[in-house]
Image (cartoon, rainbow, N blue to C red; front, side, top):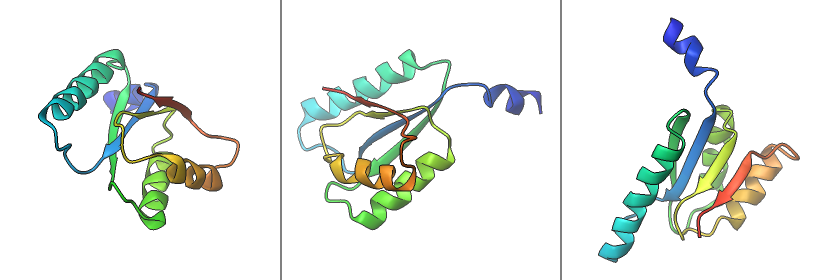
Length: 107
């Protein structure tokens, strides 16, 4: 019971990436290293990992956005170079206008 209460005070971070593995071995390694780095950076946080298909539909984006919002995340980190987040962010903003979590784009 105490552990659950303590976890409610931890910052909540969502890592968002593509659902399929990258074709190039170097990109796979970079992705794994980025997830490890963000896990280390946010070690005092509740970390959730979400994925979108490379050509995700509005339906998939809507479901993922609703799930992220239900977790009350404070930050969304776009870890991967794909899929492009424009459609996802628009849907996220439609669901929760003017209350977006902080968006972090890894370059």
